[in-house]
Image (cartoon, rainbow, N blue to C red):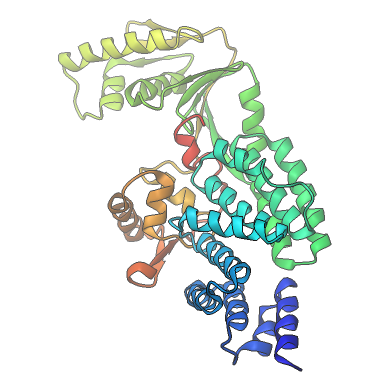
Length: 405
């Protein structure tokens, strides 16, 4: 078999999701096309460090004389970066590669480049930007890319808590994945489907704590109940949403009152909870009256707060008042949320996704590791983190939950 035949056969094996068969054909070759295929094979096997090195070598090997092949290598590098949660891969480099692919008529790989950018935007919670980028991708796609297209649609719908849209997109993705005949795509679709049937949040009402699936969360949002949403830091009822993400004291008070509804909460209990104190004195009670007044004004469209002999109580026309709580409530829940996708993350990528510094994330990871909630492997810049804690979906914990996108 000639060199070109070997490369073509290896390419077909990779397209079918069989990296070992591809490596058997080209593992000893070091020309640029073989390096590129070996890099893709190593990425499919999960060795992202080796994959990156091989793809960089292939891109250098192709050079300026083969712009189309070089652009394909850049797209492959971007895909490996996304899979290894290297979210700092330069967007301009990927955009230039996509433009080169379009100029040379390679519509499929150009669309794939766009999908990578959309998936990155989705990971960091920029849903509106992801939707705009998705709209630029043509609808006529081969089965593998149709699967990716529907998975992105489903991902956006899940993050926006539109479960019917998400389920319909995943059904279409499943059909496209079967048509493509790539087992890895089937597994990705199955994993996304499991999200819809996994615990997404907890409903706290009159002292009872009940787990909810994402579909049940959506139904709760559509009801006329008054919901203090501790996932997105809002108070909502019958389509009216009052954001309190930037007013943590007011939100804490609203949650405490909702948890005790229809009863009241003592002044000292509200002081200790809202201001994080161990003891309450008269100055703190005075401050509480000020904050209760502010909360009363903010909640006026949905509820009132009345003073009682003991403290304060929430009054509303809604027949039900409840708190929607995170499946995991602790200081570093957003870090756990990102790690719970089953992939390994660097601390820099976590910082980028969460909009905070790498040092802050590293402190959180160190504390979580000491508690046995996360694990790491590798050293230096190659160090990656993951969590062994399964059992809940993180749609309500991810970065967009910190504000209304």
